[in-house]
Length: 224
Image 1 (tube, rainbow, N blue to C red):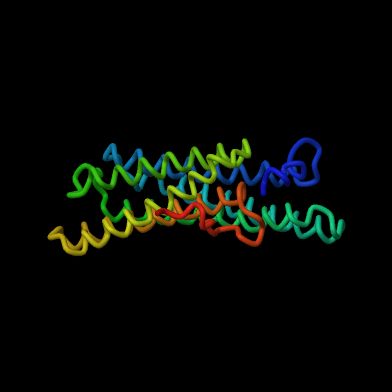
Image 2 (tube, rainbow, N blue to C red):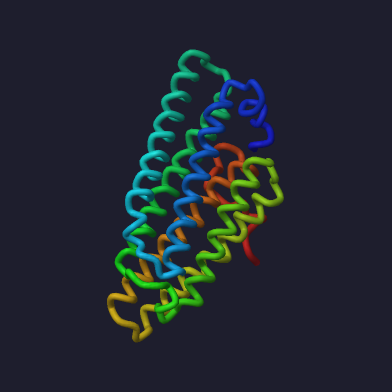
């Protein structure tokens, strides 16, 4: 899908500025994510990140509004021109905005814990989920910028597999004997990581799926 629309977003294309702003949103969310995870794993004072995390989230929100306003203006002034590209951006820019929201939620979940991730009973499992989302951030941005449909399809399929792992782990946690505080913090972290993965997959879907099927997974990508 995106490959057919890239001419609307590159070079002197009408949506070039909005395309670049969207990529900036993705990079800001990725920066937020790594700041939070690094602080959690190193046992740093997570509260010291508050100002930076909330500021980056505000920047992402402002960019979303700018892009949406620009797209509406573009379609009003140029009816019938770049409609598909505008609608694709309108859809995935919301996913990028949600990445910022969920990174903020992840910060808030780690703030409740206020300790190093290594002190959690399921530290190794949590770090495995964190690493996966970190990789998906990088791969999604790469797939989008390079229009790599094979990589995008792999990201979508990967999300289906990890969904089961996220849910399975939460079910395991419910039956564990960890303290209530630790269980709540862990569930919040895992659910947030799952949502981050889902929105990144939605963005990747713009590379391989037609407009009306964005955010979905083709049957041929389903696990057997």
